[in-house]
Image (cartoon, rainbow, N blue to C red; front, side, top):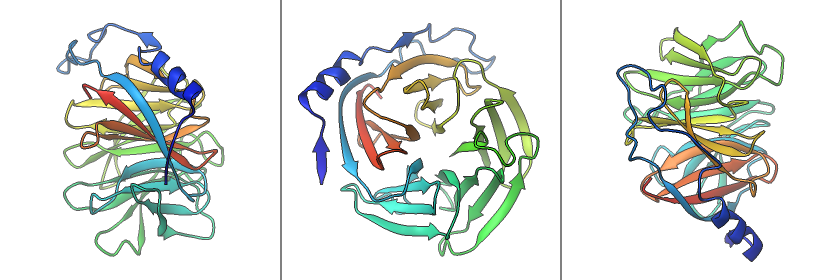
Length: 263
């Protein structure tokens, strides 16, 4: 059942539709990739669905396009319907899954495991066997500051985010190779990330600052939207079909539907 925020929450959400910190959209854009200065979506409303996912820590579209996959840092991956109906997708007794994404062409599902610093794949259509693609061994091993986000990028590559110490964005091939890495300074952490192929931009969630950050493909923050009504936003998925950004709350297991104009 969809629940709407209280009147106070709605007023608060409307009050923060203007970016919490505005930056020139062309500021230090990487060579060969300039984000249009005309692109600046506007936050207009917010609602949420209740789920039974233990600690929502990542989001992506479900393989059939009818719902979401939600990463759980306790059990693995769950499927969530648009009404919040929750079923198991791939779970283990204990699986610190912090991010999930899908290849839109093959429907293979990829996820990251914190502490072990693993990038893994579930092959379509069975999604029964987990395949290790690679380990990020130079940061985050056996800590709570490790791999936290993953998103399908393009040309057979993934973008993988290390949460803190360092805040690092990596290009990861489906063959298991890291082809590029850079440390970010415009956000305090990578709680999750989502590549938007429509606008060719990257969105990064920062659960510490409670913000959604619009970024260049290199991770440079262009604009931020405050989401103080989300306690611990660790999942993000950009959904053009519903004109919204879905944000998963690790604390409450709610998934927020934040609607934007001009998304």
